[in-house]
Figure (cartoon, rainbow, N blue to C red):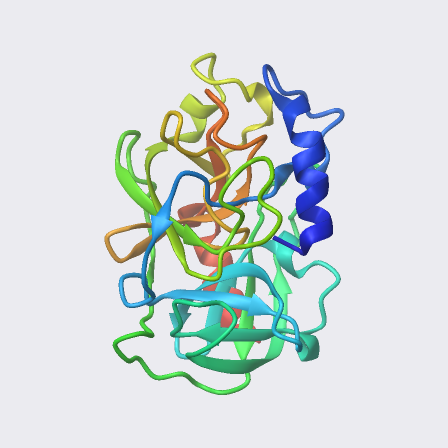
Length: 262
């Protein structure tokens, strides 16, 4: 979530997205990720989860710690951002206190990212100091292959917990369990997105529980492997409109190459 204003825009326009979705009038503000139908959890259960924050401590996106100095997030979280103005809170169940806050020395997002189609929605942050693993801070592995459709996964974040009337973000980390839907199935007639799903994406779905599952940039995980990055979704908990994620295997090489270059 990039602030309450964007959240309110999402809530206002999101209901127009029910039914078949066309890309011609797609608005990125309609594609925000957030936890719906989840439950409280702890950072120790998901120690790779981080919060991207402003200098004043306002949470605006999630991310995943993949090594001592690298965080993976969504490209749309980083567009227009300057490294000196972004901070990362690690090792805390609460986004607004506890854990450890680290400055960012550099950032980058995929050069093929499109704000219109949401393809290649991936970016990385390089921390200003290395972070060692503890019980509450752990690195997560990058998936090399997309799990098959039907695989159980978990998504976490501090995003809004409902579609309407939730005027503030939860302070406690939320989790929700969903099931992988490969991109070809997600764009098929089984669901409502159609042609706006691309091969750099993966979907995840759980009927009547969540649709936009998670906080933008946050992790979709199977075991201790990052398989998706929360990217977008129309409405919230809407039938046959799964949450859409950046497919980590599709962008893994870019993440590793760019991380070494920064």
